[in-house]
Amino acid sequence: MSNVIKFERPPENKPPKPKRSLSLSARRILIWVGIVAAFFLAWGYFTFFGAGTAPA
Image (tube, rainbow, N blue to C red):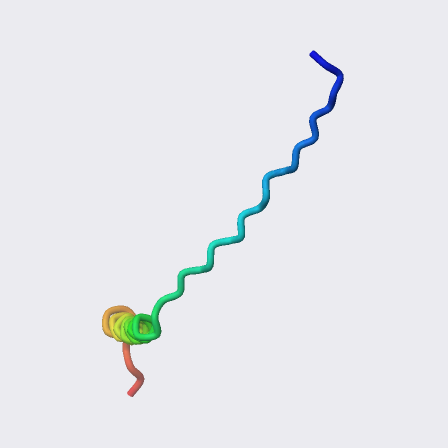
């Protein structure tokens, strides 16, 4: 063993990978699917649970 301190550089940080973004057409399709699903869920809720008795 020797009393020599070995200086080493710390490993260099790798640049973060760029986030993978969806294409414009895929994003539009997902938005429309979400809108249609929201309307479908609202329709189902009011059809099965929210109807109750309507005031005359």
